[in-house]
Amino acid sequence: MLVRISGRDESPLYSQIAGQLRRAITEGKVQAGERLPPARELAESLQVHMHTVLRAYDELRQEGLLEVRRGRGVVVLGSSQGRARLIELGRAFRVEGERQGLELRELRKLLGEI
Amino acid sequence: MSNPERRLAVWVASIAGLGVLASAGPLLLAASHLPEPLASHFGLSGAPDDKLPLVAFTAVLAGLVLVPAVLAWPRVRGTKPGSAPGRLALLGFSSTLSAALGVLTLWLNWERAVWTEAGHFQLWFLLPLLGLPMATAAVLGALGRRLWPGSGVASAPGAQALPLAPGERAYWSGVAHNRWFLLIVAGMVIQFGIFSLLPSKAPTAFGSALLIQLLVLPVLELLSRIRVSINEQGLTIHYGHLGWIRQRVPLARIVRAAAFELEPLAHGGWGYRGSLRWRGRAAVVVRSGSALRLELRDGTQLSVTVDDAETGASLLNGFLQRGTGLPPSSSPALAV
Image (cartoon, rainbow over all chains, first blue to last red; front, side):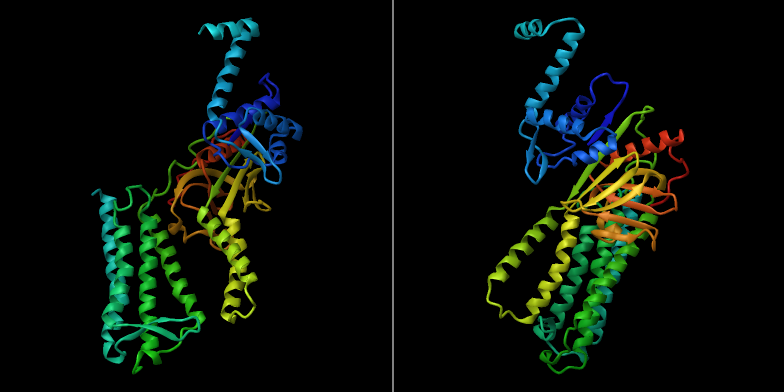
């Protein structure tokens, strides 16, 4: 799995990391059942605070992509790949909507009309 | 058949012919000096414990050469280009093993009246019995890489580099598994559990077998899963599920990286093969398939099997390119 972060990107570091990991998982670069590298290693390599990486891991855990197992570290779940894809598309939809000046309420309505 | 395939067929046929001659020939020539049937199998104590008629035994030896020869024949087991060195190595291994078994059996049975009087099998026989075939496999693998240049190289070395913006930070991690090794490890652990429950009257042969296993077990575990991580400092190989044992290669030591398909037999088998210091080439072989190759400053080469090696190689080349402002060294590719 490849993780790249750029200072020029305006989105926060944790969401850049989460985005890259999400993509790696949905594209199958990381297999279900595989452990993610320790957060410390990722943090040192990307020169970010460990909490930034942990926050990215936590975001993916809430989306059902990861599972935190005691003593085994962070394990990738494969079953919710469809859901992850939806979340990814939904996020793009929302970002584009906000760029066009639409509010969440209006976006919901639009989504219902499709 | 294409030209390289025809060449491979000629090599396979020649090695197989030599192998059959070398394993069956001496036994058949010396038939008058051997018991009939001859001792063909030896027990744990080293004493002969089974027999075979001479003809049947030579047939077994010939089979040991001919079956791998069929497997090594071009287009059998897929048409993956670049598998030629591995095919030659496999055939070389089994041919030499067969010849060594033939010579050893001849020696142990020489001038004995009946098979039960044959010489005893000593533990050190295993050294040439496995060492010679492994040496042949390594030589034929190296020869194969020379005869079929470019085999096993998926991309031109250094051709791909991930473009990295100044200030951009990047990290890559990939794994390689060998479920067979893990299965053997699990089997050994279960076996230890069973033995520890048995009353302690097992024969000493069990004891030494267990001791050997105790040494083999951690090595197998370390090779059942490896992880490779890459950052701006360089590349790190983490051995085993715990990843406590690490090998670091600083970026400053690396000239360029490439991805290729690795054939274990062409590198002398599984495990940590070769040596950077003594042979200038080393390979961490956990399975066959996708692998990363590093060309180092001192002219040595380190290969390591890892999934999606292509991305890893391009990130390393990206770091190298950003560091120097030049594309990774574009000298002609080495014939490997």
